[in-house]
Length: 95
Image (cartoon, rainbow, N blue to C red; front, side, top):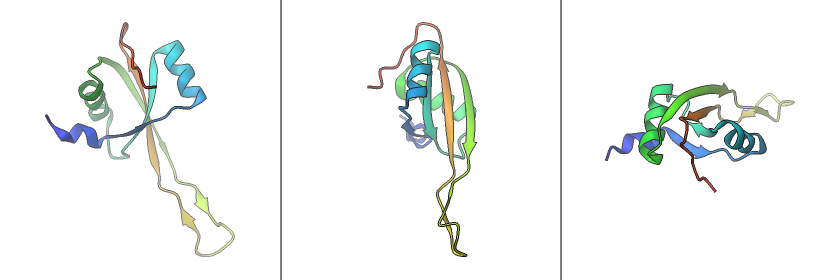
């Protein structure tokens, strides 16, 4: 099997909002690599979980500044979130 698909998905985001999306709208939220595009994310979900994907939405988040009052401030890493909609009848058991 191609191990490249495992490089695109980092983790599942299990928050209150993500849980509501999965229960009501059959959407699941994943933290993905910033370089992954929608087609790569769709293929990765279909290969890893063996489910049919209807749609993928992505959002980029900038890393937050830390210790801003000094000249040598740091920054958290920027990251990307993917909201994956599964086709009718498909369901993921994440917990």
